[in-house]
Image 1 (cartoon, rainbow, N blue to C red):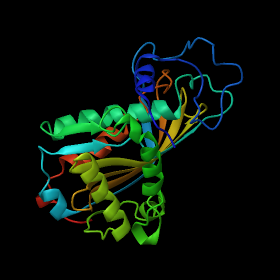
Image 2 (cartoon, rainbow, N blue to C red; image 1 turned 90 degrees about the vertical axis):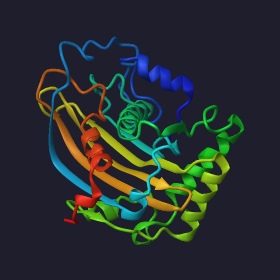
Image 3 (cartoon, one colour; image 1 turned 90 degrees about the horizontal axis):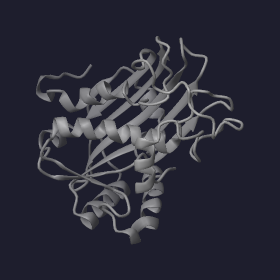
Length: 276
């Protein structure tokens, strides 16, 4: 579980090749932390081939139809980030849980601005929308959300329900359990918010031997909630393998292939869409 500080945000943005995996990673390079990154982002863009894809999305048609584009949305960091990498990984200098979280946030921000230019986004971080004094409350809140009962009686952090529905896209007015609904209501009231964007889980594993110059696997559950009503607006599950087709290693911008998959939900005309 990760909680980005403002310092981490800016360091992750500007410090490409800043050292080996951070505390959110499951392993680290042996003695490579201070080695200059000689393979980072040079001579062109990262080119990827996407395979082994699984995708699921559902939306609450009523909640989606009443989206208030001028409302305030509270933007959560990913509640649970798993950053996997081998011990020896020359393309992992900038790879960490914090880097993944920030990279995802950058994608989210650009899509929100494009879809809802009038919607005000507030970071759910101490010192931002949250008072500094609420730092410990936020950590507790993340755990409470992850452990809340949701689909099929399973916890919100459980990806099982979405993996089993691979290939399905459907309008579904999913009943939100009372405890989770009340928790969403409490957050909305406490911080004067209407919506909450919550990347529930994010898991990325770096695979140096994949493709021409390495690659990675990606799994995410991303959700948008109408906190005032305690309803799920929509949810997207995305899983894929990204392999390089060029000599540039994927040492940054891991979220780029997810962007069009999330945008598919933001940009869909639900009135013209049938379940399939």
